[in-house]
Amino acid sequence: MAGRSLRYWRGDPRYLASAGSIALMPLIALLLAFTFSRQDGVQITGALAGASLALAPIAAWFGSWSISNDIAYDSTAFALHLTTGVRGREERLGRVLGIAVWLVPVCLVLAILPPAVLGRGEYVPAVLGGTLALLGVGFGVSCIASVMVPYPVPPPGANPMSTQQGAVVITMIAQLGSFVAMGVLVAPTALTLIPVIAAGSGWSWLTLVVGTLSGVACLVLGVRFGGQMYEQRAVAVYERITSWPKH
Image (cartoon, rainbow, N blue to C red; front, side, top):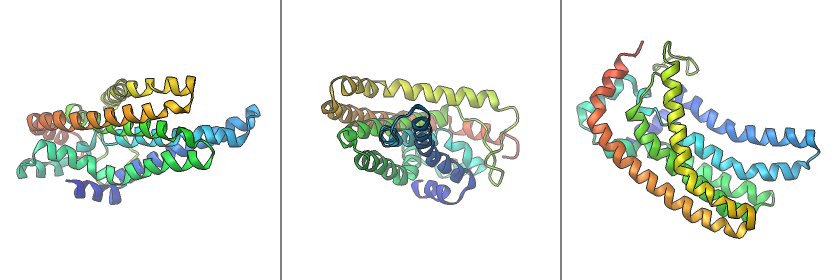
């Protein structure tokens, strides 16, 4: 499952478009910091240093969430999972590993290198904690969401930027729901940033501990419950996919 998923990330235009958007989000943060510094008279080095703290969490948020509708991209090839009897937990975990093998190293580099180079090294533990929490939460939520509410996507070979007719509402509801779930689950880690901001960077280690534990817990629970839902709903999900135009 992981190898198959990774092959999609390397060659499927729809997945490549998602990978491009993941890379684009941190660049937008840097561009906004540069733009605001020129308008408000803030030193560019200070603005970029502040923005560097957000690069890894942004990549982790959008990257982990990008597999929240992963089954839909399989289209009718999903039948292979049904006929071969892939077990739920292995199916869910395989999809996570397929993206984690490259996303996690990228996020770790973004969490450590830019803040250290730009003079914010004391906040690296907090950035790492937030990043790991977002990765684990996002993967866990995605494991459940992609089985619970699959929504139409461009079929294989179609323009990856195209939208499916009549799918706007369900797409917005599903995406908003997964975003809200991620926000709620990452809240405990986010709250540990209050003493970091109010009392100093020494509290960054608390964020690292809480973020790591909550991220691992959400990932484990997401794979477990997502796997159970997969085994209960796999046939219904396949029938839903085949009802979409051109799938």
